[in-house]
Amino acid sequence: MIFKRNLLFIALVFTSFIAFAQDEEKKDGFTFGGALRYNLLSTHYESGSGSLNPRFTWDTWRLNVDGSMSGIDLSFEYRFYPSFGSHFIHHGYLGYAFSDQVYMQLGVNQVPFGISTFASHSWWFQGPYYVGLEDDYDMGIKFDITTGNNGVLSLAYYRQAEPEGPSAGGDVTYGNAGPGRYSYDIVPGTGSVETNGGFQTVDAHIRELDQFNARYTYNIMQGLEIGASAQVGSIYNSVLDDSETSTAFAGHLVGDFGNFNLKAEFINYNYNARSDDDQELDVIQMGAYGDIYYGGDGYTGGVAAQANMYVIGLAYTIPVEWGPVSGIQPYVDYTLIDKANPYFHNTEHLIPGFLVTAGPLYIYVDYAMGKNQPWLTDSFGKGLGSGVADPDWNKRFNINIGYYF
Image (cartoon, rainbow, N blue to C red; front, side, top):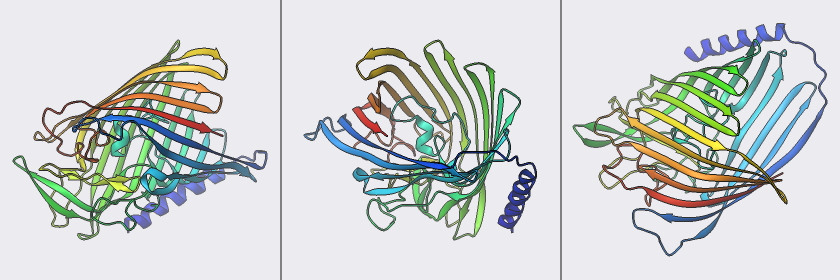
């Protein structure tokens, strides 16, 4: 019944905008592109550096199609990740400009939440990405509405997460295999309940449904943007046949000061969900890239159900003319995830590095460091749940070489 009311609401909004549609001549045609990316990396995690250091990996290759026909736009991207044994859609939507002020995207599109397009400068993203709150893509409908000369209001409804590609282990199981996706979403499987510092693993067949997003950005002056975002949705348990209300809120600032670029953001989220036996979950399971976060050794994997996130990044652009090299951008990105549960341990994410731009080449050179960061560890997926007390900084030197065409 709720879903039917949502569809009715969307249909009314859609119809009202059609009434004000303006005929615009747009040249028909499509362009094809893609990218090929490699990593050169060396890790120093809990066990120290291993015999495989350094090593090359094939990061990704992708195909893009963008264009328009009869005023209806198409944007599509599909990605292949050989290192993860998975491939999946990144985005795929139809777009239509109802007027100079209103643009619609229907399909798999970027969720309007927080800093767009990325809260990060580095190849590693910032902390919100790893809990589904940066560069997230879902299946639904979005309207971008220009308000005056300096403001943009985005309103969106997403019925569900984006479609899944194959998992890293073949069929999705309750082991380490998970959904083939670009962005992190809640997945069915297990969760954790905390009791006085102890953890109980419970079944939790949960997933995201019926999510609404609103985001407003305003340019105070040229090169200085402030914004606020709100996200309200349902986390549905198929065993209980019931949903809990999930929320996330963010405020952000993006500013250009000469050659400096500053990105700052605060996020509060509450992934309110219940287990199959109707207990409130302290840790929920999330997955992407054909894998899920998983724990072990007496502490939980997954993601803390509630937290505050503090995000800041600073970059400086240096224009150069060294053959094909046109720019160098040093940067440093940092995230602190302060988990609401007093028995949980914070996550930190610190990425100093620089970007080299040379025609179609984009080369990210990063020295990634993390405490309770699920990707910077010998045991993938640990850290965003309960975490460990007094962790050392794990480190990974990474060079990502991407050719974009």
